[in-house]
Image 1 (cartoon, rainbow, N blue to C red):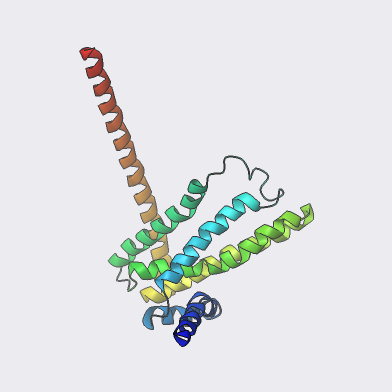
Image 2 (image 1 turned 180 degrees about the vertical axis):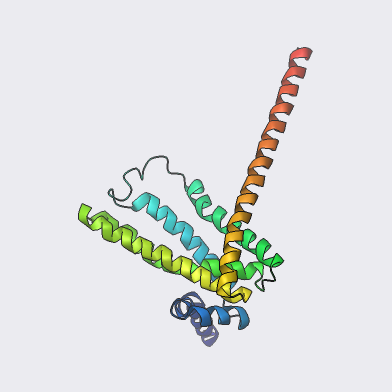
Length: 218
């Protein structure tokens, strides 16, 4: 039983840390192994998805005054979580809907995994940077912003390479599908807003009819 526990622990550490770091240093080979050798795990993607939410909360609540002077005003943990959840869900659905029409080979689960694995460099950099921001001087804020920019660039690069690999696209087609994905997200958001508006109007109509009936009865 002890050997079994050690093996599970070793496997878990490999899945959570070793393989993600391997992808960071060998993105093409790493994402190929994620897809074809099934080395990528959905539970690991979910862990980093949650860590991205935690990182966003930390940025909004523990950043230094020079970085976030209004950090304590109107903070809402649920709204902050939605700032991560909604864009990722929309990106997954948008990319899947577009690539399904353009002969993409990636499944929706693989797209989600690529995005979450791709966020790892941002997570690894932004969390320590957030705590360090409390000790920065005004002149050092530029360095903070530079490293944040590097973190965003690395995450975008990793996601781009991941989508290229799992869909088996070339460079040009990957760029094209990302543009179409942005358009698809805009369409989904528009339809969502339209639907919510219709629901709100229907609710207001029902309420007004109900109030009218109550007034007539009374």
